[in-house]
Length: 358
Ligand code: F6P
Image (cartoon, rainbow, N blue to C red; front, side, top):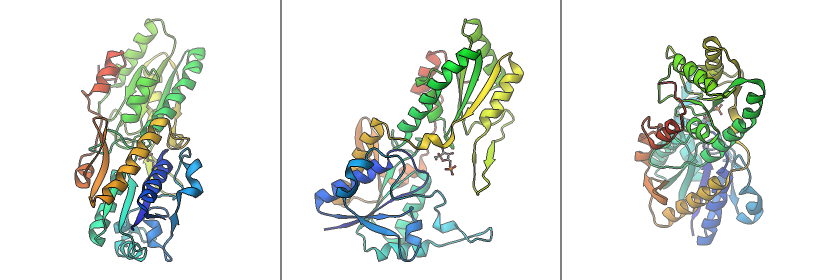
C-alpha cells in the first residue's frame, strides 16, 4: 500500500476539484491513501504540517462540479525565494522538504502551471521525492500538452461575456472591447474571439497597429454592421511596446488595463463610441465545463497509474487525442505560445477576423 501526497499550486481554475476526485478514486482502486496538502507548498511549510487524509466518500458527489480547489492554493509559492517580510526573500526549501518527510509519503502529485511545476520539480529533486505533475492553467500555455485543465472553462466564460456584450453593442451602435486573461499568451483571446464572433483579436504573439484595427472597424461598418467586438489579451503591449500592469493594493502586480488603452485608441482613431470590459477573475471560477471535467478525470487517473508503474519526474499530457506522459523538464522548458501561423489563427483570418496587422 502507498501514501500519495496531492497538492494544487499556482492560480486556481475550474476543474481542479475534478482532478482531486479522480486522483482519490483511482488511488482507492489500488487500495492506497491520498493525503491532501493545504495551499500548495504553504501547507508543508507550516508546523504542524497542514494536510489530511482524503477519502472519496465524503466529497465525491459534489466536487466534480465545483470551481476552485478544496485544498486551497497560492501563487506566491516559491519557497526558494520566500518573502522575508522586509522586502527581501529567503530560501525556505529545507522547511518544505522536512514537512514532506513528516507525512511519510511514497509519491507526490502536483497540479500546477509551468511556474509551479518548475518549483515543485526543484523541490522533488532536492528532497528525493517521486513526483508526477498534472498541467492546469486557464492560459493553456504549458508546453508538451495540447490541453491544460481550466482553459476550456475560462474560454467558455469569455464567450458568454461576448454573448452578453453583442446585443448591447448592437443596440447602441458601439464598439465593445473585452480584455481577457492570459499572462503570457493569447490562447484565451484567440479561442473565445473565434467562438464568440469577434471582429478583432489582439494577442501578444502578433504585433498590431491601431490604424489597422481602426481600418477594420470602419470596414465592418461599411459592410452594414453597426457594432464591433474586439477581444484583447491582457498581455498585449501598448503601441510603443510597454506592458500595462495593475498594482493591487493588497500586494501583487498583474497585467490588466490594456483593454482601456486599446479602447481609448480606437475612440481616438474612429468615429465609434467605445466601451471596455475587463473580465478578470470571473474566468477562473464557475462550474468546470464538460471538457475540463473529462480531461481532469483522464489526467487524474493517468497520474496515479504512473505512480503504480514507478514512472516519475513526468507530467501527464494530452497529445493527438490520447493521454500520454512527458519528461517534466521538457514540459517546463517549452512554454506554449500561440503560433502566429497556426491552425486557429488561420481559421480566424479565414473568417475575416483582424489581428490588427493587416
Ligand atoms: O495564470 C493564470 C492567471 O489567471 C493569468 O491569466 C493572470 O495573468 C494571472 O493568473 C492573475 O494572477 P492573480 O490571481 O495573482 O491576480
